[in-house]
Amino acid sequence: MQQIKELLTMYRREVAIAGIVLVALVGVFFASGRGRPSPMPTAQNQPVVAHSSRAARRSSTVVVDVKGAVNKPGVYRLAHGDRVAEAVNHAGGFRDDADGNQVNLAKQVSDQQMIYIPMKGEHINADANSGGVGDQSDKKTVNLNTASKGQLTTITGIGDKKADLILAYRQQHGQFERVEDLKNITGFGDKTIAKIKDQLSV
Image 1 (cartoon, rainbow, N blue to C red):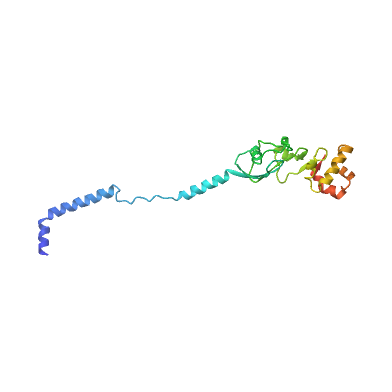
Image 2: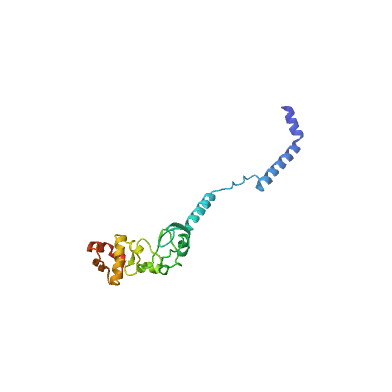
């Protein structure tokens, strides 16, 4: 113990200088920020970006149901902003009996939209005509004076036999003046006409 005291007394100056230098070095180290722990990079936003990308992809497409006088009726996925023309192309294009004059091919399609392409001699209501396409609430009618046999058989309650009778009546008597004239044909009673009246026009 006595020897340690003697050593400290002998080298007191050196010990003091070493202590001062050590304190100065520690101060410089912390002042420069080297002693601060680096912040860990976060990935909190990464899942949000991925989710946003998936949502963007979903919102960039629409699903439409194409019906009527097209070659391949069905449900199709289109790009957001596509027109009715693209929907018709996906469905194989117009059939030969399609009435393209009633269709607004330039109208943008919307998700869950039903696009109906009428046949020649078939008329869709004014709302459908203004938009060029029908939806599930649109009422389409078949013109008794211009419809073909195939068009007549699309009416509920009119089969091949009744369609032939309508064509024969039209050939013998000329045009129908009103839908109720069907009563002049065998098989068309008041109840039958009442059921199909909304689907027919003259």
